[in-house]
Image (cartoon, rainbow over all chains, first blue to last red; front, side):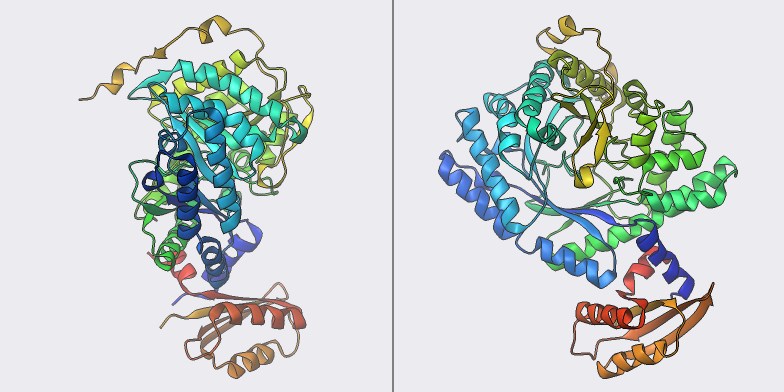
Length: 454
Length: 90
């Protein structure tokens, strides 16, 4: 039988080390809502989401209370809207009506974010894809809970540079339209390479077309727990370090697995995957950067950071994989800046630059995340940043992403406040040399040679 | 039968166990096992209980026990045993 020490260990993780389940995300396919009449399409979407997800929040809260484990977010992901709206939407404005419907549905069922205002354009854009992409600034500024993402590249297809160029402009426009709130709109938008179909984390969650009608995906967390465990093995060798991370990741993931199984059983919706991610929050002690410091760095960003992060990411996976029957999504350590107090400290100390963050994304999920940049950054420069990050993903056969926030009216060193889980961030400098001639070329970057495996 | 683990943590005073047990008896919750230690002056108790005969739901019991804890200045948590089984047993 369970003994008092084990019970205390678990409860200490929950009460003192910020152990939680970060999100239960209900994936809903909207393919059966498709209609060529916009009004009917909107009605279908609203009805399907509000009926399928009506018990999601209540069930999540019930599980929280019964097991005594916080479940921070209950969210929804839907089929990429560019596919769903392709037949009914004849303009970007038409797509915005769907965004508003999604927002209304999210509010009705009480979820804090709904992801899937998305397009998959790794090889090229359809007319509908382009309408959707051009509607992103309006959609994100006129809705509250809708999250958007665009997949612009993959190892199999290469990178659609036309979409990359367009998205640079759209990110700036979104920033402009939400400038009263420190350009918050951009925090709800992410550009992907190799986007997974079953990611439960926002802003990049969408319900892929390879998925069943409805599915429960769960994202676990627990940087605080890993950091605490590592504080007991200071100065120990790498083997001990790795073993400690693995064992901790196993325990954290088991809780996620339990919550996923229960949510799935109670809602009568199949269980999809557990996303084994170390996802930080701005809360003190819930930081991935702090783990890197515990491993032995003065600040995240110091030489050795990429190696330490590679080790951390790998051990989290090795420990987590055995704890769950299905693992998927992004699964890795997240390194957002604004959502992680240790990262914020590192930037303020001058230890961490955009270029170092880019290097770090080569060895962990997911990418340049929640990075505030000066509001006068050129669209082509943003496209250049995106292209670099996409190339890393494409060549390394991993998911990479970009979620940067050009904060209109603010410059390097100033602070921006996004609030809640999104946190706050100092604005980071961006290399100001031009990449305009590169970005303005038309077409796409071909798939790399190692994608030809057949 | 699924068991519920009740933990009580707080400053040691007279009557903590009595208070918790009274609540459990009144609500038809059977106690299967009790272990208790004092760690650095802090009272630390774990009970394994069976609440299947109680008319109240486990969520309701958890909420009411939390209130009982507040009354006597300790933290009482009431959790389904599976969270511990999952984490500590393969």
